[in-house]
Length: 327
Picture 1 (cartoon, rainbow, N blue to C red):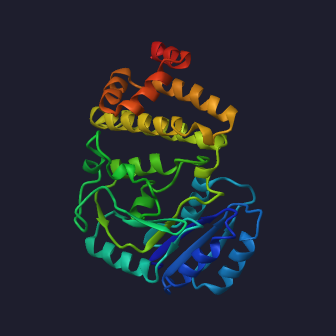
Picture 2 (cartoon, rainbow, N blue to C red):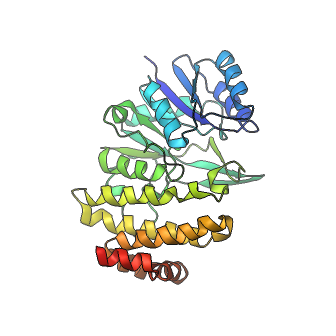
């Protein structure tokens, strides 16, 4: 049986893919498979992946004929995965040698549904250690309990699918697939569902995953309409939290996080194309109008003045007022 399936989507990352592929070679093992999903690249990425399939043990190339985005590419990999454990890697990141072998061994010893891992954030020459906001390391915990408290950064805010390892039983239960078509924030509904529905998890601290920030082709650097998919993602988080058996416990956290993300985008309007900035304000106001208004009041009262002011100003727009009256 394949012990580990690593799903690696690629799209127009020919500059960075060689580092990623070299690190996969340094992590190869006879019972590991690397599912390289080309999401219809238009640069030289596909040629690199074709060569990697021939040269890296366990590498399998999967190709999209139409670009579907990161969520859809990961789902393609999940459909093909044969491993007892599942991992994700982005096509512009890289790993230290032996990362996966150590991670699998430690996860098997813990015997939990999934683990989350610390990582090293790379921005040019700068290196920053990023820790999972949950501890202590190596202790099996209840994922539902790790969603709270509402006013503090928790494990669901550490929304990096690649920062972890996941047992196949989660895939068999339908908990590892992403919402098809989401172009950004695809990890948000995914990590919330995982924490609500899985039974056990732990955190680990190997600083052997290197996450590259500031990549020009990354959607976080592009100010087009795809950025606004975070609204769809958080609408899903709100809807699924409202349907949970403990909705009254989880909704305050979901609403507050949604407000914080809206405030973040409002603070960075200059990166958006003008038409997209206008659409962000319009759709953001409508989203605020759909939220439970008492919880929205409480969330804004708990936030710092700068962020709360941005969201309150948006809330006063006609779209938000109309949505609130309809609710």
